[in-house]
Length: 343
Image (cartoon, rainbow, N blue to C red; front, side, top):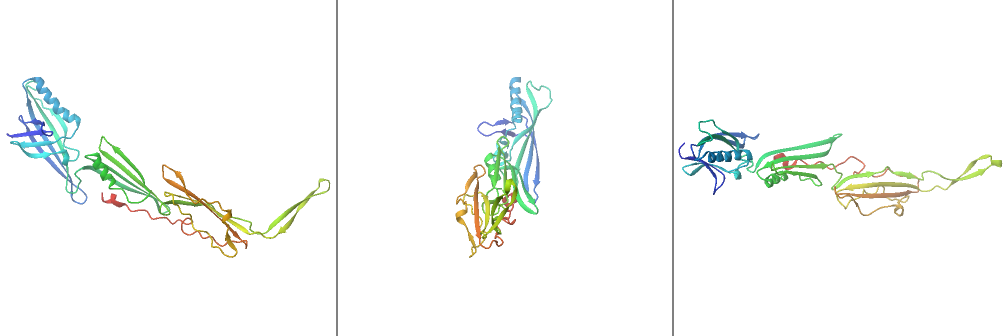
């Protein structure tokens, strides 16, 4: 193969191999599930002979080649014929390559003296039409958790290995679902140029509302009221008390609850009854706060308590109106899988 030489590294000072160099190329094409070319792998198998004026110079050149393999660093590889590039593999348009993956010296008379025969393999991985030039590995998944037939949690996971940290991060973030109020975790592995990201969605009752927890309604002063008069018998004898029936009091109903959510402007449930001539809301007896309180700075959760006090002159209450915001199991539907499904 007269006239051929191999250049390892960029100009102006690449490592040039031209003494009795021979090489073979092996290429494999990997398709993806859609039938497009996902990536193309090439192995450049090189054999050569380093010739030097001294054994020290020869050994130094062998050590330089071996160091390229030991470092596992990517480097530009050009195969030239008569000083014209015929094959040019650059880390810019390859996937975590080119890099030397194998090196050995070949037994021959005179090795480590005036010359030294060697062989090494360069690995090249390039994206095909169905792949991404700056991404070498992409794994995605979506996990759904259900309770009693209702989806209560979705977990999106993505792991990306790229030619650069910025490329890996950009690809990972492109898989982020569009649902609001997500828990997000991002891990960067700088040595591997890998980004792992995850997002968790928890079931909610409304926009920004996680949960509305309401105590059972308590009723007091239902039925007749009495005045109790105690009696003292002669010489300490026990006598039963006397009950005096009083006028009937108005009955009272107490409603208490708490709203928890991701927004400070939390809305409390609507009133549980409608006022009438014999049913009134007793607001002067209520303990309400118009503002929510920050419950957790780390999670960004807010909390707002509420109370209703009602008074009935008939001694009874109609069925309360709980609506559909906290008494039943109506929930916001879970978000779709989003862009991760097409990644």
